[in-house]
Length: 402
Image (cartoon, rainbow, N blue to C red):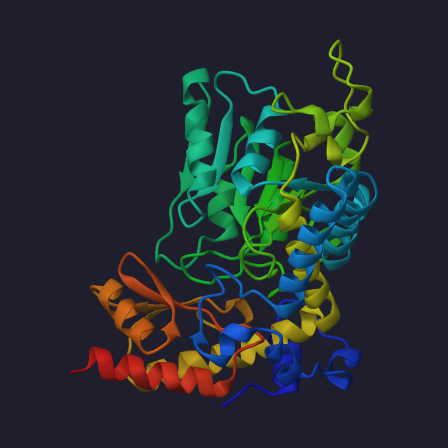
């Protein structure tokens, strides 16, 4: 059965206020914004959020401006859209627009931040084995400079405790990078405690929030992250090619990236090749021309999330996820999920020996999920329904129990 509002008020990691329950969004109208759902049951937002009618219209607007104005579109419309994008993401995480950089990817964001730290031989970087591996890959690449990478192991493939991170962090630690929600289990980490442990050692924290922002509320002022990065690809409904990087304002002047470009220059249109003067804002981490098309789709995706409200989305998604987990357990499936609703953020891992062919057969029935080694992965979002969940569980049972 779906969780009640009272239960959710206690269980969710982000407190829901009274207004949330008084102004519940019209989920049917929200769902109608996504044409894919007229044809398919889509439970794969953890890989790619759906394209809305509004983002398609925004993309058409971008192309119309390009066709009509050519390069002149930059100076009024496109730069204004870039600033609106900062405002929309800042609103969602309770930051200021000048703390937001527009980046192409998590990998590029991590590279920019890492290049801002004067890493020396013997320094240590820390991440977790459940984090998306682009973080560890970027860290390991610094081994040639004598920098050590510590990858904290998980005992159960679901979570890594803050105490394990604390034990791994030392006086040599310069940067700690981890996720707020693990892509392998949907577990919501206690990021605040990890940030405290890193700060006590004098290290900077980098939070990969790609699997969290939009579906799990956050206030960066409360969490204490130095850097937090998310993007349009998944829960923020903007598609690939755009990432949003928050950098805490009082840290910005201390970080001068060596991976940089003309968009990071304080006076980029002076075209001065004789010096690099960094912007005073998080814009100093930007390198070159961003994907303008992704800016338009990304801004509209953020508007949708902000209009619905992260608290309301969390409530809706938690209800659907709870139904999914309970239904799968009733059918006898082995799950790799967090132990309670409080720590579970949509991503539901269903353990199967060979999930790939099952995913393909579900797709033949217009049911879209994905898989990772040893598990099928389903991830409800606000635009799904209880009927979507029930049809998926019935189909999965039929395909795997013959």
